[in-house]
Amino acid sequence: MWSKWIEPDAENRIWLSMNCVLLERPTLGGGIERILVESGAGGKWTAKEEAVYLFERGVDGRVRTVEHALREIGVDPASIKHVVLTHLHFDHAGGLTRFGVGGALELVFPNAQVHVQRQEWLDALANKSTMSRTYLPANLEPIANSVVLHDGDVEPIPGICVRSAPGHTWGHQMVIWKDHEGTICFAGDTMPTIHHSHPASSLGYDMLPYQTMLTKRAMLDDADREHWRLVLDHEPGDCVVQRGIRTTN
Ligand SMILES: [Zn+2]
Image: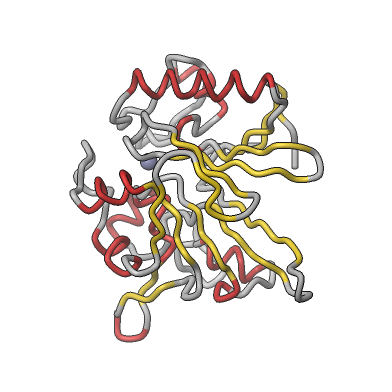
């Protein structure tokens, strides 16, 4: 069924993105407040792992990270005040850290609070997953003093809401905010690509596939009723969708 939708390469891989969203708004003091949703997989990979995942490379020949992407648009990672993550699997939390001089782990966003669900943080520390190598200590230990833990549906940053969205993991969350055109929902791995809009399409590593289906159905109902735009985290094409119609921004 999937091969009708996406053609895999000879190694049976498909192209996926790790989409991150940068939100900016003016502060009363005349500055800019910056909030990042998601951080991608980062660049702390061995040559073998890079070959397995076939990560895209930046102009410097190294694995392209969210840090590359931000610097390309003139944004200093130190100016990011908040990072909101849907969950802590490596392709979402890896971009928070990098190897510094001498190989020591460093924070890419030294001045940011990292917002996740308490359940997700506890499950990550306990490595509670069917994938044994997705909650990586190198991604978790350095952020222990940066995390702000949330329980369920809250507004941790004025105007930015998180909503419990269990299924992919127990502590998975969606991120919801408004712009001048209406409500935007970053769906996370509840609906990673446009093909996952089908109710029965789930990820092989969802912890609770049936719950994913229920969470996704509720999200799509809300999106339809309230005219949300959805941002799809792993969609390699146009990642902003509205009521079944793909848009291009
Ligand atoms: Zn995941």
